[in-house]
Image (tube, rainbow, N blue to C red):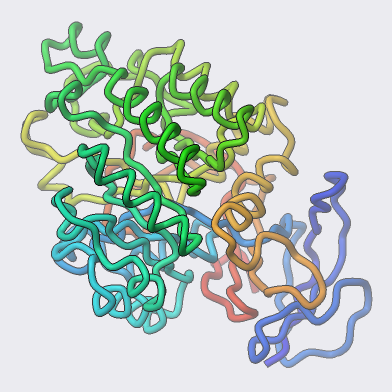
Length: 428
């Protein structure tokens, strides 16, 4: 079927200009057929009201919880939530039950994602068997099954010798290794950053646990020539280390979450599990360093670390509640409203960090809208203000610290390979 999108404004990723135009897509070939005015008749016309047309967003770090934790999220609910957030591809982490450490489990996730008919789901497989940190998985078999990267997210690989061998094997296969940087001997099951922890009388998770692990893995990546991807950077020394590594020519990319860009430990006014996330919300100095690193390109991309939990789990006492926040449905509106509108960065640059650069980082298709390219498109409304209401999320998780915040830039339409995977009531 050929679909024509009319009434939208296409963002030029070269000069940042917005041009009212039409886009013709084909959901059989999955590509953009034409961009311009007065395009040929199509089987279906989607009429927009001035929304901005952007390449579908790509998230390199989400938790879809399946298999094993379907009460928190399923591949279907997570993929639908992603589509509602403007995402056409998401990379899901392997800390499920069982963990994604075999080709069979990788293929299971891929099939469930296809059946969901929403955003594309790209599995990231385990570095170590059962995420136990003791022996490596079969990287070649996992890649052949469809894994796009490797990670033991949720915990760091503590054994440096084993991690070095992981980098050696991953380099041979051109597989990125996404690290959860946490030295457990330093972190010691801490909950909040030092300032909030001392103020509220809870255990401290020291920032050095993150930067120490990043320093180790930068050196290992440099020596092996592997691609190191640093997850959810949260402390100033980590930003400095990544900047230093890039200056040395190390193949390193890095992500930052919306909550580490917009919140600090000063935002935590009570021992509420809604603020419990790993890595924790850090000091204002750390937040400013992450923001500066994001603005100058040291931190390449935004990733949500979308981590849904049930309401019952997040209602437990702080020490017993799980770490994590959801973010897939609100990240673009939050960053558009709080970074683009105040003039801290351009719309063009934000889209590059949420679409183009994630695709480039992991060698994925998409990230741009062009004739002949994938018809992965989202249309966002930058003129209408909405209040973030977790009860309206498509995700099973409602654990967000941004409830009640106002924002603009919510998606009204998302297409994956020319197929409509999300359409709001505002679009006819």
